[in-house]
Amino acid sequence: MNAILENLPAPPIATWLENIDSNVITITIASLVVWLIWRLVYRQLEKLVDRTRFHWDDLVLAAIKRPVSTLIWCWPATISAGLLLQDYTLSKLDWLTTLKHFLLIGIFLWIVIGLINNLESYVLDQNKRDETTVQAVAKIARLFFVVIATLTIMQAFGLSLSGLLTFGGVGGLVVGFAAKDLLSNFFGGMMIYFDRPFKVGDWIRSPDREIEGTVERIGWRMTIIRTFDKRPLYVPNSVFSSIVVENPSRMQNRRIKEDIGIRYKDGDKVELIVTEIKQMLKSHPDIDAKQTLIVNFNGFGPSSLTLMVYTFTKTVNWIRYHNVKQDVLLKIYAIIKQHDADIAFPTQTIHVEPQHAGELASPHST
Image (tube, rainbow, N blue to C red; front, side, top):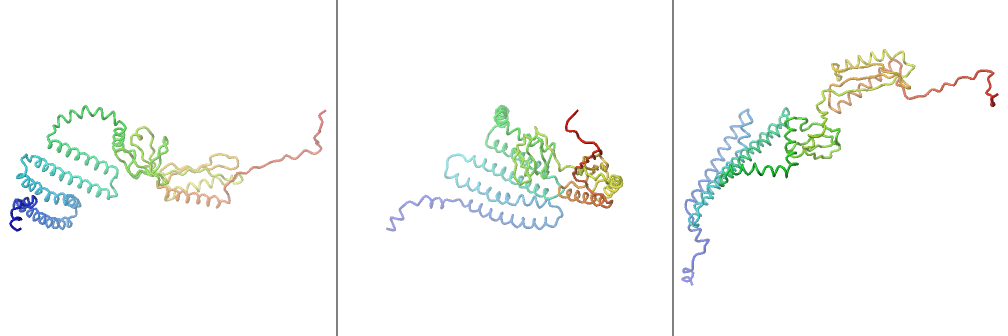
């Protein structure tokens, strides 16, 4: 029985394992050693960059950590694959060279995209930075490197870039007509980035459309606006090229404009009331006295003497504005009461003429 088993051919897997080149084992062990060395070097670099006051080195180090580890294992793996396959295939292994190029391009793109993402997150954490500009620059940078990597990969696979560009010129017209809405939204987003009618976080509204809310995100195709009742609006960017957009967030002041009615019987006190209200507004800490400030007796109403109060607050915050307005109106009311006057309310007076004595209405005309 043993003699029969000895004469049987060895299984294919066993034969393949026996014929594994020792170089493959050496390469694998060398990869492990290099990876361990890289881990030690990375830890030392982490300690070194923690001591510096700059944050850019931390971002670069974080961006290269995983790509370098992947390269340490994948590059020797392609070499080992070539050594294993060269004895079992008669075809050329040119695709392994292409795979190495693809690996290098992918690792480079991985590092660059990771670095851009880290820089974007870091800059956005700085409150003084414009979120819209940072996101626009990051998107353009990512798109640029992705296009460069794609063209390089195509060239590595033997595609002619000149022919590709020629085809792109002709095909671009067809694509332009087929995807005109997509392109109009894309260029609409570019115009938003360049013209800057609004940015992320602004409160905008349009008198042409039922659009009002806070801008949450400006994408390449659409802008997301959160309404005040917390509903999301997804507005194509091309819309903003054909509508009027109002940006209340960029107001420098907010206006208080009120018409206050004083009773007619308090007419002799109006001049003093107007003077004190004006002095109060000029000395109010939340009123911008450098802007237009008007307090005047403005006309005779149906049941009151109308005072016009026209001024601007220093704050543009909606909640703070209403608090200031409330304080101003309460102080105006207190000034009116100090002069024993009062706010008028709609009234009607009926004046009946007394009938002359001796005059009797005749039921019949003579």
